[in-house]
Image 1 (tube, rainbow, N blue to C red):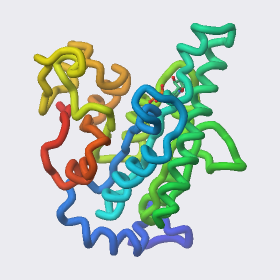
Image 2 (image 1 turned 180 degrees about the vertical axis):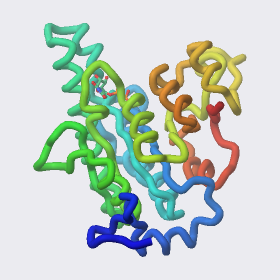
Image 3 (image 1 turned 60 degrees about the horizontal axis):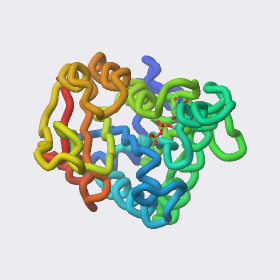
Length: 265
Ligand code: UDP
C-alpha cells in the first residue's frame, strides 16, 4: 500500500510506525491491542479524602505501566471528583450549574498533569490532551493525533471530559473508547467489580462475574452513567469493572484472567 509523506495510506488511515511493529511482537499473550482506562478522581486520593495523594498516584502509575509495558496502547480518562463535582457545587452555592461543571472539568486537568509527571518519572512517555484548550499545559484532543501517540508507545491522558457541561467523565470515556477504536473500556473502582448491593453495607451482596448491558441499564446498577453504558452497547465495546487497589489487577485483566465484572452483549 502506498503512503504519502505524512505517513498516511491512500485510504487516510494512519500508518503503523515501526516502533508499534516492535511492540506488537511482544503482545501475543495479551487480550487487547488498545484500551481506554477510566479512573475516577477518588482514585487519586485516600479513601474519603480530597486532592491528590502521592502514594495513590504511584499505585495508579504502577498499574498503567504494567499494561503499557505489555505493548498495549493505553488512553487514560481521568475524573475530577477528588476536587469537585459540578452538580454538588452548584447545589451548595450561587455558582451557575454550567460554570460549576466547567470547574469540574478543570479539576480533571489537575489530575491529568499529576499523573503525567509520575508516569514520566518512571520513564514512560506520555501526552496530556484536553477537551478544553489549555495551551500552556497540554495539547488539544485531536483524535488522529491521540491514536498516533499511542501507536508510538505513549500513554495518552485525556483531560476535561467531553469539554461540555452536564455530563461526566464516564460518558467521556465511553465516547473516546468508541472514537479511537478501543477494544475495551476498563473502569477502575475501589471495589473489585459490580455487586448486587453495596458490599460495604450488605454482607449478602454478591459480585457478578458477567453482566449484559441491558441488565446494568434495566436494574440501574451503579456502574457508570446510563448514557456511557448505552454508548458502549451501541458500539460493541465491552466494559470491565475492576479494583485498581489490588496490585497487578489491570495487567491480569489484559492477560485474560477473570477479574472484576465484564459487561458485554
Ligand atoms: N464534567 C463535565 N463534563 C464532562 C466531564 C466532567 O461537566 O464531560 C464535570 C462534571 O461537573 C463532573 C466533574 O467534571 O462532576 C468531574 O468529573 P466526574 O464527576 O466524572 O469525575 P469522577 O466522578 O470520575 O471523579
